[in-house]
Image (cartoon, rainbow, N blue to C red):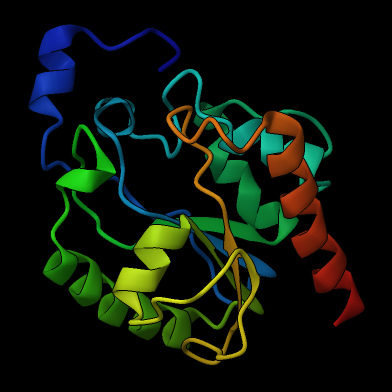
Length: 183
């Protein structure tokens, strides 16, 4: 769906869920905080115009070209997947409670243990800190695996996270790509 959702479709997307893009043995499972209403309405991860996930993914060297969110199902062919800490769509990630994030962290760890990606890349430092009880975590590689996977925390690519420029986001995604190949 490349058409913009209507106001009613966005309103109807509140608390909806979208399917994971997942397969066993991926190189990297990217994990967002939770779907926004735009993603809930379209069924595509990181779908809101202005979200910089797809450009950062390409700029970091993970995709051969800039993908549109509607092309997300091509990611497993590249060894990539997408899931979320919390499955339900909301207008803003700050609408999620700490308990929701912690419960989502438990579910995410079980999902990672089942699907066995090499890396889990959590896209959002604040959500990672809350979900996994690591209040001092910083962006980059983490010392403790989750579900058997190495963990890298990336900045939130939302346009609301303006202090991370598009170039800085792509650079951080590129650091993960380099770590993936050095393993």
